[in-house]
Image 1 (cartoon, rainbow, N blue to C red):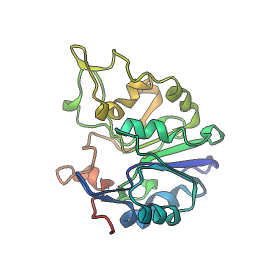
Image 2: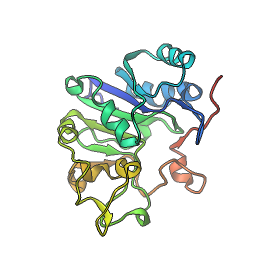
Image 3: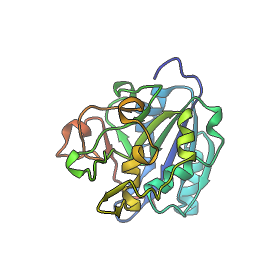
Image 4: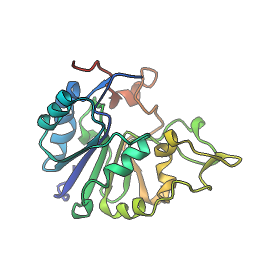
Length: 225
């Protein structure tokens, strides 16, 4: 992380724990995130917006990190909901730079090995182009990193923009909107967007994509009862 950035917010969003349809448990990768992600960033404030799981594990979550602020919200129905609502839990305009990361992301390389541009909107990587429709560029929705000037784009976002579609007037599904975030934010892909990894990769990091998986994967683990 560049030494020129001194005021950084890290926002975790999504489900910290779930049993179905694919189990997830943040507690099992907390040390991984601290070592390969948070310690690489250095001094930062850490925030969280997530679903409540149960009283015992919610309390454990409160204690497991030095959160600046934590918010439980069971109303999110998609990744884009989580992204948008996580940016509303605090006044983030006072920060220089924001990392917005999904719970469950396991790092297999330190953040210093990712290509970050402090002045651009950073996406993890492009997804395979055969998944693109209607001239769109799909990206991984697991990690976004950006200077706070792009909060204005979020404030003016139109998630019902009919020009962003699968084609033939078929609107982007809620579950896919975060994959099309560059288009919804009206970003100039050539000049305003940076990809932390070159090439095209599967969103979750898969065995069939050893290049992407060598950097990150979505951790799946059984919930502590």
